[in-house]
Length: 154
Image 1 (cartoon, rainbow, N blue to C red):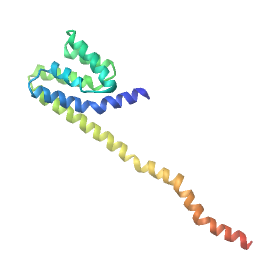
Image 2 (image 1 turned 90 degrees about the vertical axis):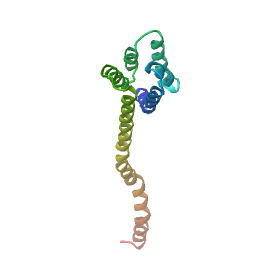
Image 3 (image 1 turned 135 degrees about the horizontal axis):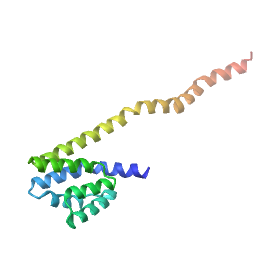
Image 4 (image 1 turned 180 degrees about the vertical axis):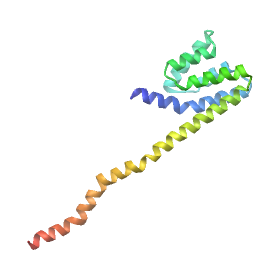
């Protein structure tokens, strides 16, 4: 349960984190510095993982190695970011555009997960209605007739 909560906390911050990195890269920072700056703006468990990753970057590890260690810590989307950054560098495409596209994908994924949970709501509400609202209504509407029948006799 705690693992799921941590994963949800990370996924909630991930699209914004990617977007901030893209903005700082567009502003002229290199990717490593942008990653370091954006890590300082995260919170909670994600902040702890980001701090560990920044320490690896400061000790001389490449961004790909630092992101793979971030992935081992439980941040599953870090592998996608690592692959995207490596491909963008090798192909010569603008990193900011790749990061913007990746953040948009995660925003869409978050929206789809929300819509999935929202689509399951009518079933849950109908079960609650049947269990908690229908019995009192039946008692209120049927009880007077049953009492009247019992008073008059068979």
